[in-house]
Length: 119
Image 1 (cartoon, rainbow, N blue to C red):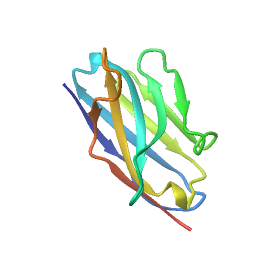
Image 2: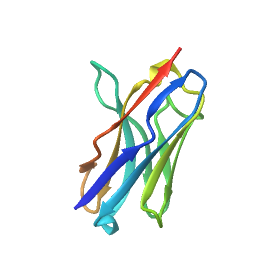
Image 3: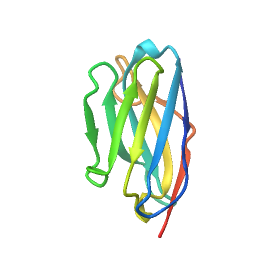
Image 4: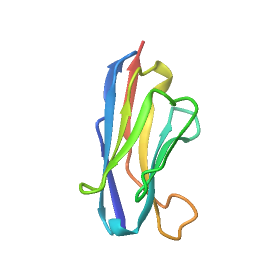
């Protein structure tokens, strides 16, 4: 099994930056891709960004393109989400997720880290 632990959330003013981290442990050799999702109060969980574990191919939601960057440290088994030019609408609980080999979708989730952007 793969375990995920997020960190790095907090309170920031609009226009500021935060970097989220997601440390993976356990059978990390089984990871195919990792992603970030977010869920605001009374809203559905939305996709934010994705990176494939081996090739490092990335994809982003339109709402964060040009502001957020996903990256991974293969040695540390950690995925990062650099968030710049934050907006109040970015306020949400951010989740890290892993898609393991042969799984059609993300099958492992972290507990979430809160990001709050004040105007």
